[in-house]
Amino acid sequence: MNLKLPKTYTLILALCVVAGPFIWLVLTEDGKRRSDLFLLQLFGHPSFNLAVANLRPGLDEAFLLGQFPRVAFTCAEVSTAPGRRHCEAQIGSFNGIPARQAQLDWNNGALVAVRIDYRGRWHEALIAELTMQLGAPRRDLVGERTILAWRLEDGMLLAPEQLIDAEPPVLVWIDQQG
Image (tube, rainbow, N blue to C red; front, top):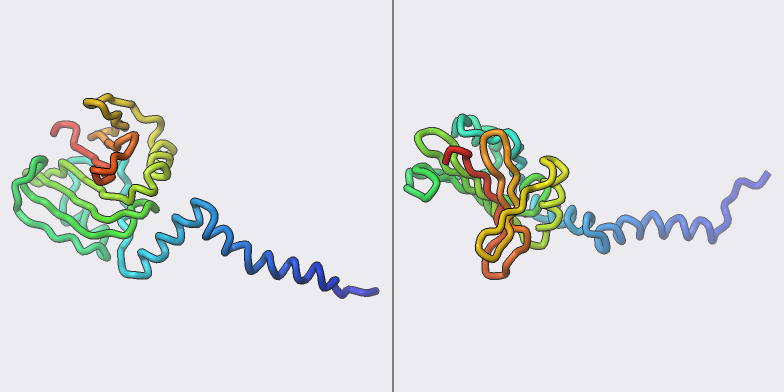
């Protein structure tokens, strides 16, 4: 009984094992996103994996920021449009989507706003992920733009339907009472 594999079969199998992952990383959108996430993590940009469905005004600043010890938030008493205490940090990803910055605002100890600046290339992936997690968004017309809105228990999650080159791509959670 001859158990030896033909050389052609062995060569094709070896090429698939070597080339398959490379092709996936380079040619598929999911592979490109995961490559970006890996490189951002490699260069020291931390992940900010925040459960947006659980955001609420009662979240204590120390508790919320303590959940992300690798993210270097800088906080200051600054009067901004949403609040009086502002925290921000450079990040590499937000819930598996390549991102740049996270900003959180508190007013009288209550969380009132969260802003995530993400990388525009991954806008469709972010919207698809949020739709899968939170359901279909409401579409609100603001001026000439359409804004996607997900109503959560204690707030509203907002994102543009289409990106405009002049504006940075942002995802915003705002307190319902704010």
